[in-house]
Image (cartoon, rainbow, N blue to C red; front, side, top):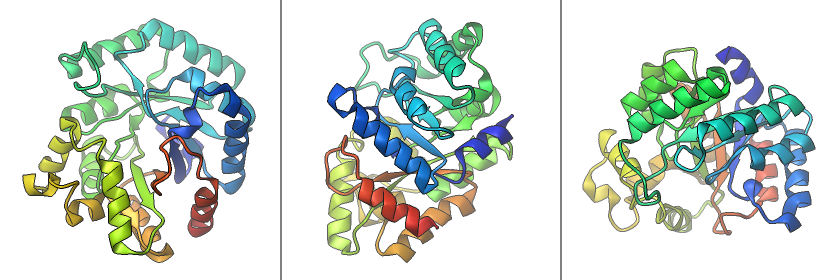
Length: 288
């Protein structure tokens, strides 16, 4: 069944907070952008932030074959029964087009955060009871225990803010069948100083979060790499930047490390909820 998921999402997708916007005045713009992404050849869009089936449904309706996934739906803010009902509604309207991406979020953002791994296992039990198939859900897994859970209780993993080295490690744990679809920030800038400055501005939101920093430390980075917005070494490992050849080479490094799909997030200094459609077109041309 994971083979069907891999075929549905293709090699490349777009990760976007803007596509999950709840602004009713932007509904038409979001639908038009999703339709264009499908025409450009992207296989999937991943809705950033604490997204849900309700955010995905309008984009599924606006397209004919595009896969829409949450990245992620917080287990703390969505009860399994409600998530199951929402999944069933989208599935009934457009079978096979929606993937439920789940995660435990972060202690600094969730008041009730406690024993996240046990809570995730219990949430998956609830989704089983609510009728959400394991092969239609994905986990934002970073550490070994969560990756094994993604292998055994889901269709695979959608890790965020990772390196090719983490991808290789994740593939080793997951095995060949599960989907591995890391997110990758793309900075369309050739000047090294400007590119790294944009990446560091983006990283400000994430470096205070232990889930990410602990993962960096597990994979060869030191405390020094986490200071002052992130070292050049950290920035260059986490982001694709430079000319078209350099960006393509970085994307390919994730595929070479074992990713089935790469979810590309444009990082260009615009607000996080922007819809950088020209940059998406440029990326599509680069990817051929």
